[in-house]
Length: 78
Image (cartoon, rainbow, N blue to C red):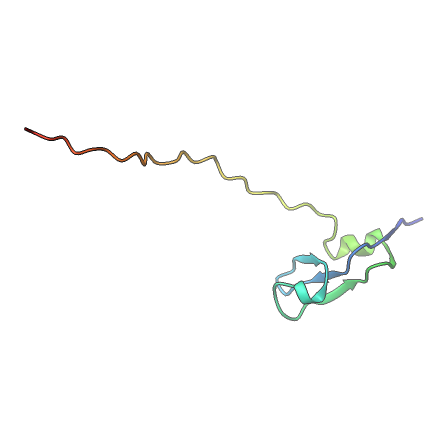
């Protein structure tokens, strides 16, 4: 028995293979393919086949130390 899920937002597959959830007018790249329509039920296996539900590893950059930006007065030799 397969599980079904009701999709809350339209799901679009972009040319690079990534997914976008939302309105077609907000898609960052051209020519997306519609994977799922909002408000309809789809099999979880179907959505996973298209890459939905997979978490991308987030790239966390190491905290960078801010460079010293204090202005220094030139030493006067009087």
